[in-house]
Amino acid sequence: MISIKNLSKIYKSKNRDDVTAVDNIDLSINQGEIFGVIGYSGAGKSTFIRLLNRLEEPTDGKIIMNEKDMTNLSNKELRNERQKIGMIFQHFNLLWSRTVFDNIAFPLEIAGIPKEQRKSKVQELIELVGLAGREDYYPSQLSGGQKQRVGIARALANDPKVLLCDEATSALDPQTTDDILDLLVSINQKLGLTIIVITHEMHVIKKICQQVAVMDNGKVIEQGEVLEVFMHPKEKTTRRFVQQVMGEQVEQSPIHYFVKNYESGKVLRLHFVGETANQAIISKLVKRFNVEINILQGNITQTKDGAYGTLYVHMDGPEEVVNEAIKYIQQTSVELEVEENA
Ligand SMILES: Nc1ncnc2c1ncn2[C@@H]1O[C@H](COP(=O)(O)OP(=O)(O)OP(=O)(O)O)[C@@H](O)[C@H]1O
Image: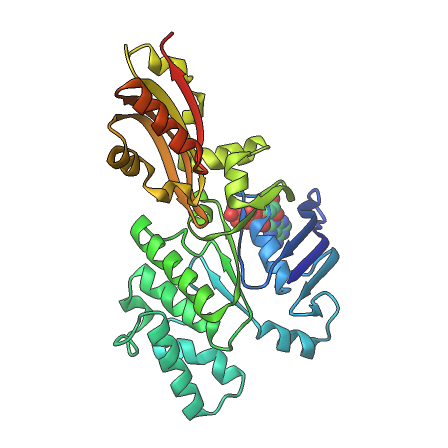
Protein backbone atom coordinates (compact mmCIF):
# COMPACT_ATOMS: atom_id res chain seq x y z
CA MET A 1 0.00 0.00 0.00
CA ILE A 2 1.17 3.49 -0.86
CA SER A 3 -0.13 6.11 1.51
CA ILE A 4 0.04 9.78 0.60
CA LYS A 5 -0.93 12.31 3.23
CA ASN A 6 -1.31 16.12 2.94
CA LEU A 7 1.19 16.17 0.09
CA SER A 8 1.95 19.64 -1.24
CA LYS A 9 4.50 21.22 -3.51
CA ILE A 10 4.89 24.96 -3.83
CA TYR A 11 7.34 26.29 -6.40
CA LYS A 12 8.73 29.49 -4.95
CA SER A 13 9.91 32.24 -7.23
CA LYS A 14 11.70 35.48 -6.46
CA ASN A 15 10.18 37.55 -9.23
CA ARG A 16 6.87 35.77 -9.84
CA ASP A 17 4.00 34.50 -7.69
CA ASP A 18 4.54 31.17 -5.96
CA VAL A 19 2.88 28.21 -7.73
CA THR A 20 1.09 25.57 -5.69
CA ALA A 21 1.51 22.70 -8.14
CA VAL A 22 0.31 20.00 -5.71
CA ASP A 23 -2.16 21.07 -3.08
CA ASN A 24 -2.73 18.92 -0.02
CA ILE A 25 -3.26 15.54 -1.65
CA ASP A 26 -4.39 12.46 0.30
CA LEU A 27 -4.44 9.13 -1.52
CA SER A 28 -4.18 5.42 -0.76
CA ILE A 29 -3.00 3.12 -3.50
CA ASN A 30 -3.31 -0.63 -3.00
CA GLN A 31 -0.48 -3.04 -3.62
CA GLY A 32 -0.71 -4.59 -7.08
CA GLU A 33 -3.29 -2.21 -8.52
CA ILE A 34 -3.11 0.02 -11.58
CA PHE A 35 -3.96 3.50 -10.34
CA GLY A 36 -4.59 6.35 -12.76
CA VAL A 37 -4.22 10.07 -12.18
CA ILE A 38 -5.88 12.18 -14.86
CA GLY A 39 -5.86 15.93 -15.35
CA TYR A 40 -5.47 18.62 -17.97
CA SER A 41 -2.16 20.29 -18.68
CA GLY A 42 -0.95 22.23 -15.65
CA ALA A 43 -3.10 20.26 -13.18
CA GLY A 44 0.02 19.14 -11.32
CA LYS A 45 0.26 15.50 -12.44
CA SER A 46 3.95 15.48 -13.37
CA THR A 47 4.88 17.24 -10.18
CA PHE A 48 2.79 14.75 -8.20
CA ILE A 49 4.41 11.66 -9.73
CA ARG A 50 7.90 13.14 -9.37
CA LEU A 51 7.25 13.75 -5.68
CA LEU A 52 6.62 10.04 -5.20
CA ASN A 53 10.23 9.08 -5.91
CA ARG A 54 11.52 12.40 -4.66
CA LEU A 55 12.68 13.69 -8.03
CA GLU A 56 10.91 16.74 -6.55
CA GLU A 57 11.13 17.65 -2.89
CA PRO A 58 7.71 17.99 -1.24
CA THR A 59 6.97 21.25 0.56
CA ASP A 60 4.76 19.39 2.97
CA GLY A 61 3.24 15.96 3.62
CA LYS A 62 4.16 12.30 3.82
CA ILE A 63 4.59 9.46 1.33
CA ILE A 64 4.75 5.95 2.71
CA MET A 65 5.90 3.54 0.02
CA ASN A 66 7.19 -0.02 0.41
CA GLU A 67 6.78 0.54 4.18
CA LYS A 68 9.24 3.42 4.14
CA ASP A 69 8.54 7.08 4.77
CA MET A 70 9.92 8.50 1.52
CA THR A 71 9.99 12.00 2.97
CA ASN A 72 12.32 11.05 5.77
CA LEU A 73 15.27 9.15 4.31
CA SER A 74 19.01 9.65 4.29
CA ASN A 75 20.62 9.97 0.85
CA LYS A 76 21.80 6.36 0.99
CA GLU A 77 18.37 5.07 2.01
CA LEU A 78 16.78 7.16 -0.74
CA ARG A 79 19.09 5.58 -3.33
CA ASN A 80 18.06 2.12 -2.08
CA GLU A 81 14.36 2.94 -2.07
CA ARG A 82 14.54 4.45 -5.56
CA GLN A 83 15.71 1.10 -6.87
CA LYS A 84 12.32 -0.30 -5.85
CA ILE A 85 10.55 2.34 -7.93
CA GLY A 86 10.78 2.17 -11.73
CA MET A 87 9.77 5.08 -13.93
CA ILE A 88 8.91 5.52 -17.60
CA PHE A 89 8.56 8.81 -19.46
CA GLN A 90 6.66 10.35 -22.35
CA HIS A 91 9.87 10.87 -24.36
CA PHE A 92 11.47 7.61 -23.21
CA ASN A 93 14.70 9.23 -21.87
CA LEU A 94 16.92 6.57 -23.44
CA LEU A 95 20.67 6.82 -23.83
CA TRP A 96 21.08 7.39 -27.56
CA SER A 97 24.67 6.16 -27.80
CA ARG A 98 23.84 2.82 -26.20
CA THR A 99 22.15 -0.19 -27.77
CA VAL A 100 18.85 -1.64 -26.54
CA PHE A 101 20.81 -4.21 -24.54
CA ASP A 102 23.09 -1.62 -22.96
CA ASN A 103 20.23 0.76 -22.15
CA ILE A 104 18.47 -1.99 -20.22
CA ALA A 105 21.74 -3.09 -18.58
CA PHE A 106 22.48 0.46 -17.39
CA PRO A 107 20.57 0.41 -14.06
CA LEU A 108 22.06 -3.01 -13.33
CA GLU A 109 25.56 -1.64 -13.88
CA ILE A 110 24.81 1.20 -11.46
CA ALA A 111 23.50 -1.31 -8.92
CA GLY A 112 26.81 -3.21 -9.25
CA ILE A 113 25.32 -6.45 -10.61
CA PRO A 114 28.05 -8.77 -12.02
CA LYS A 115 28.30 -9.06 -15.81
CA GLU A 116 26.96 -12.61 -16.28
CA GLN A 117 23.97 -11.95 -14.02
CA ARG A 118 23.35 -8.70 -15.89
CA LYS A 119 23.35 -10.50 -19.18
CA SER A 120 20.74 -13.06 -18.21
CA LYS A 121 18.54 -10.41 -16.55
CA VAL A 122 18.63 -8.18 -19.64
CA GLN A 123 17.80 -11.13 -21.87
CA GLU A 124 14.84 -12.01 -19.64
CA LEU A 125 13.58 -8.40 -19.79
CA ILE A 126 14.00 -8.22 -23.55
CA GLU A 127 11.76 -11.29 -23.88
CA LEU A 128 9.26 -9.85 -21.42
CA VAL A 129 8.77 -6.62 -23.38
CA GLY A 130 8.81 -8.29 -26.81
CA LEU A 131 12.10 -6.95 -28.16
CA ALA A 132 13.88 -10.23 -28.91
CA GLY A 133 16.16 -9.83 -31.93
CA ARG A 134 16.60 -6.08 -31.42
CA GLU A 135 19.27 -6.25 -28.68
CA ASP A 136 21.90 -4.55 -30.85
CA TYR A 137 19.71 -1.78 -32.26
CA TYR A 138 20.26 1.83 -31.25
CA PRO A 139 17.26 3.90 -30.09
CA SER A 140 17.33 5.89 -33.36
CA GLN A 141 16.61 2.64 -35.22
CA LEU A 142 13.45 1.90 -33.21
CA SER A 143 9.82 2.99 -33.52
CA GLY A 144 8.22 4.98 -30.69
CA GLY A 145 6.51 1.88 -29.31
CA GLN A 146 9.78 -0.07 -29.36
CA LYS A 147 11.57 2.78 -27.59
CA GLN A 148 8.94 2.71 -24.87
CA ARG A 149 9.43 -1.05 -24.56
CA VAL A 150 13.11 -0.38 -23.90
CA GLY A 151 12.06 2.23 -21.32
CA ILE A 152 9.80 -0.31 -19.63
CA ALA A 153 12.47 -3.02 -19.60
CA ARG A 154 15.00 -0.59 -18.15
CA ALA A 155 12.50 0.51 -15.48
CA LEU A 156 11.97 -3.13 -14.48
CA ALA A 157 15.67 -4.04 -14.34
CA ASN A 158 16.01 -3.78 -10.56
CA ASP A 159 12.75 -5.67 -9.89
CA PRO A 160 10.85 -2.64 -8.61
CA LYS A 161 7.69 -2.96 -6.54
CA VAL A 162 6.18 0.18 -8.06
CA LEU A 163 6.21 1.46 -11.64
CA LEU A 164 5.51 5.18 -12.25
CA CYS A 165 4.33 6.06 -15.76
CA ASP A 166 4.56 9.75 -16.66
CA GLU A 167 2.37 10.24 -19.80
CA ALA A 168 4.04 7.09 -21.12
CA THR A 169 1.81 6.75 -24.18
CA SER A 170 1.21 10.42 -25.02
CA ALA A 171 3.80 10.46 -27.80
CA LEU A 172 2.45 7.29 -29.43
CA ASP A 173 -0.23 6.65 -32.07
CA PRO A 174 -3.49 4.99 -30.92
CA GLN A 175 -2.57 1.43 -31.98
CA THR A 176 0.89 1.62 -30.38
CA THR A 177 -0.69 3.18 -27.28
CA ASP A 178 -2.96 0.16 -26.96
CA ASP A 179 -0.03 -2.25 -27.43
CA ILE A 180 1.97 -0.52 -24.69
CA LEU A 181 -1.08 -0.43 -22.37
CA ASP A 182 -1.58 -4.19 -22.96
CA LEU A 183 2.07 -4.71 -22.07
CA LEU A 184 1.65 -2.74 -18.83
CA VAL A 185 -1.37 -4.86 -17.87
CA SER A 186 0.50 -8.09 -18.60
CA ILE A 187 3.49 -6.91 -16.54
CA ASN A 188 1.16 -5.93 -13.70
CA GLN A 189 -0.35 -9.42 -13.76
CA LYS A 190 2.90 -11.35 -14.21
CA LEU A 191 4.98 -9.42 -11.69
CA GLY A 192 2.25 -8.16 -9.33
CA LEU A 193 3.78 -4.71 -9.15
CA THR A 194 1.79 -1.57 -8.42
CA ILE A 195 1.51 0.78 -11.41
CA ILE A 196 0.74 4.49 -11.15
CA VAL A 197 -0.18 6.10 -14.44
CA ILE A 198 -0.56 9.80 -15.07
CA THR A 199 -2.30 10.89 -18.22
CA HIS A 200 -4.62 13.42 -19.81
CA GLU A 201 -6.40 10.69 -21.80
CA MET A 202 -9.46 8.96 -20.38
CA HIS A 203 -8.88 6.13 -22.85
CA VAL A 204 -5.77 5.15 -20.87
CA ILE A 205 -7.70 5.17 -17.60
CA LYS A 206 -10.62 3.11 -18.86
CA LYS A 207 -8.38 0.57 -20.57
CA ILE A 208 -6.03 -0.33 -17.75
CA CYS A 209 -6.87 1.31 -14.41
CA GLN A 210 -8.97 0.03 -11.54
CA GLN A 211 -8.90 3.30 -9.61
CA VAL A 212 -8.70 6.87 -10.80
CA ALA A 213 -8.01 10.22 -9.20
CA VAL A 214 -8.91 13.40 -11.11
CA MET A 215 -6.56 16.33 -10.58
CA ASP A 216 -7.40 19.97 -11.14
CA ASN A 217 -5.38 22.94 -10.05
CA GLY A 218 -3.08 20.86 -7.82
CA LYS A 219 -5.94 19.13 -5.98
CA VAL A 220 -7.54 15.71 -6.27
CA ILE A 221 -11.14 16.74 -6.97
CA GLU A 222 -12.62 13.28 -7.40
CA GLN A 223 -11.47 9.74 -6.82
CA GLY A 224 -12.81 6.22 -6.93
CA GLU A 225 -13.20 3.02 -8.89
CA VAL A 226 -13.10 3.71 -12.62
CA LEU A 227 -16.57 2.29 -13.25
CA GLU A 228 -18.06 4.29 -10.39
CA VAL A 229 -16.50 7.50 -11.70
CA PHE A 230 -17.86 6.73 -15.19
CA MET A 231 -21.34 6.19 -13.77
CA HIS A 232 -21.50 9.14 -11.44
CA PRO A 233 -18.94 11.80 -12.38
CA LYS A 234 -19.53 14.57 -9.87
CA GLU A 235 -17.26 17.35 -11.03
CA LYS A 236 -17.43 19.23 -14.32
CA THR A 237 -13.79 18.36 -15.16
CA THR A 238 -14.51 14.66 -14.57
CA ARG A 239 -17.60 14.80 -16.79
CA ARG A 240 -15.48 16.28 -19.56
CA PHE A 241 -13.02 13.41 -19.24
CA VAL A 242 -15.80 10.80 -19.28
CA GLN A 243 -17.18 12.45 -22.43
CA GLN A 244 -13.77 11.95 -24.08
CA VAL A 245 -14.60 8.27 -24.36
CA MET A 246 -18.40 8.20 -24.18
CA GLY A 247 -19.08 11.08 -26.59
CA GLU A 248 -22.25 13.04 -25.94
CA GLN A 249 -24.17 11.37 -23.16
CA VAL A 250 -26.62 8.92 -24.71
CA GLU A 251 -28.52 8.94 -21.42
CA GLN A 252 -29.76 12.38 -22.32
CA SER A 253 -31.96 10.93 -25.10
CA PRO A 254 -35.39 10.53 -23.50
CA ILE A 255 -36.83 7.09 -24.06
CA HIS A 256 -40.20 8.45 -25.21
CA TYR A 257 -38.39 10.10 -28.12
CA PHE A 258 -37.88 6.64 -29.62
CA VAL A 259 -41.20 5.06 -28.77
CA LYS A 260 -43.31 7.36 -30.92
CA ASN A 261 -41.79 5.76 -34.02
CA TYR A 262 -43.29 2.35 -33.25
CA GLU A 263 -46.89 1.18 -33.23
CA SER A 264 -46.30 -2.10 -31.46
CA GLY A 265 -43.75 -3.64 -29.13
CA LYS A 266 -41.72 -1.83 -26.52
CA VAL A 267 -38.67 0.34 -26.36
CA LEU A 268 -36.13 -0.73 -23.76
CA ARG A 269 -33.26 1.19 -22.28
CA LEU A 270 -30.61 -1.27 -21.12
CA HIS A 271 -27.92 0.10 -18.88
CA PHE A 272 -24.77 -1.98 -18.53
CA VAL A 273 -22.36 -1.57 -15.64
CA GLY A 274 -19.39 -3.84 -15.17
CA GLU A 275 -19.27 -7.29 -16.68
CA THR A 276 -22.99 -7.40 -17.55
CA ALA A 277 -22.41 -6.21 -21.09
CA ASN A 278 -20.40 -9.33 -21.69
CA GLN A 279 -23.44 -11.53 -21.12
CA ALA A 280 -24.41 -11.33 -24.79
CA ILE A 281 -27.89 -10.51 -23.58
CA ILE A 282 -29.28 -9.52 -26.95
CA SER A 283 -28.38 -12.78 -28.65
CA LYS A 284 -29.68 -14.76 -25.66
CA LEU A 285 -33.02 -12.94 -25.89
CA VAL A 286 -33.39 -13.65 -29.57
CA LYS A 287 -32.48 -17.32 -29.09
CA ARG A 288 -34.81 -17.87 -26.13
CA PHE A 289 -37.83 -15.82 -27.07
CA ASN A 290 -39.72 -15.30 -30.28
CA VAL A 291 -38.96 -11.57 -30.42
CA GLU A 292 -37.46 -9.18 -32.93
CA ILE A 293 -34.86 -6.81 -31.55
CA ASN A 294 -33.87 -3.66 -33.33
CA ILE A 295 -30.95 -1.66 -31.90
CA LEU A 296 -31.85 2.04 -31.95
CA GLN A 297 -28.94 3.76 -30.30
CA GLY A 298 -26.14 2.79 -28.02
CA ASN A 299 -22.90 3.77 -26.49
CA ILE A 300 -20.90 1.17 -24.65
CA THR A 301 -17.29 1.38 -23.68
CA GLN A 302 -14.97 -1.25 -22.22
CA THR A 303 -13.25 -0.52 -18.94
CA LYS A 304 -10.81 -2.81 -17.18
CA ASP A 305 -13.62 -4.00 -14.89
CA GLY A 306 -16.11 -4.66 -17.68
CA ALA A 307 -18.30 -2.68 -20.02
CA TYR A 308 -20.22 0.46 -19.25
CA GLY A 309 -22.92 2.17 -21.24
CA THR A 310 -26.47 2.28 -22.49
CA LEU A 311 -28.31 0.57 -25.32
CA TYR A 312 -31.76 1.52 -26.63
CA VAL A 313 -33.59 -1.30 -28.41
CA HIS A 314 -37.05 -1.82 -29.84
CA MET A 315 -38.44 -5.27 -29.00
CA ASP A 316 -41.44 -6.58 -30.90
CA GLY A 317 -43.39 -9.84 -30.90
CA PRO A 318 -46.48 -11.37 -29.28
CA GLU A 319 -47.24 -9.32 -26.19
CA GLU A 320 -46.89 -12.15 -23.67
CA VAL A 321 -43.56 -13.21 -25.19
CA VAL A 322 -42.25 -9.63 -25.02
CA ASN A 323 -43.30 -9.52 -21.35
CA GLU A 324 -41.53 -12.82 -20.68
CA ALA A 325 -38.38 -11.48 -22.31
CA ILE A 326 -38.57 -8.36 -20.15
CA LYS A 327 -38.89 -10.52 -17.02
CA TYR A 328 -35.81 -12.42 -18.16
CA ILE A 329 -33.79 -9.19 -18.46
CA GLN A 330 -34.95 -8.11 -15.02
CA GLN A 331 -33.34 -11.21 -13.55
CA THR A 332 -29.95 -10.20 -14.90
CA SER A 333 -27.86 -7.37 -13.53
CA VAL A 334 -28.63 -5.16 -16.54
CA GLU A 335 -30.66 -2.13 -15.44
CA LEU A 336 -33.85 -1.84 -17.46
CA GLU A 337 -36.32 0.90 -18.30
CA VAL A 338 -39.36 0.08 -20.47
CA GLU A 339 -41.54 2.42 -22.49
CA GLU A 340 -44.53 1.49 -24.62
CA ASN A 341 -46.94 3.38 -26.78
CA ALA A 342 -50.02 4.26 -24.77
N1 LIG B 1 10.06 23.67 -11.81
C1 LIG B 1 8.97 24.45 -11.75
N2 LIG B 1 9.04 25.72 -11.32
C2 LIG B 1 7.94 26.50 -11.24
N3 LIG B 1 6.71 26.10 -11.57
C3 LIG B 1 6.56 24.83 -12.02
C4 LIG B 1 7.68 23.95 -12.14
N4 LIG B 1 7.23 22.75 -12.62
C5 LIG B 1 5.89 22.90 -12.79
N5 LIG B 1 5.49 24.14 -12.43
C6 LIG B 1 4.11 24.65 -12.44
O1 LIG B 1 3.31 23.78 -11.64
C7 LIG B 1 2.03 23.59 -12.23
C8 LIG B 1 1.80 22.10 -12.45
O2 LIG B 1 2.70 21.65 -13.45
P1 LIG B 1 2.83 20.10 -13.84
O3 LIG B 1 3.86 19.99 -14.93
O4 LIG B 1 3.01 19.29 -12.62
O5 LIG B 1 1.37 19.84 -14.45
P2 LIG B 1 0.89 18.68 -15.40
O6 LIG B 1 -0.51 18.35 -14.98
O7 LIG B 1 1.86 17.57 -15.39
O8 LIG B 1 0.86 19.38 -16.81
P3 LIG B 1 1.63 18.93 -18.15
O9 LIG B 1 0.98 17.67 -18.59
O10 LIG B 1 1.39 20.08 -19.07
O11 LIG B 1 3.07 18.77 -17.76
C9 LIG B 1 2.02 24.41 -13.51
O12 LIG B 1 1.41 25.66 -13.23
C10 LIG B 1 3.48 24.59 -13.83
O13 LIG B 1 3.70 25.80 -14.53
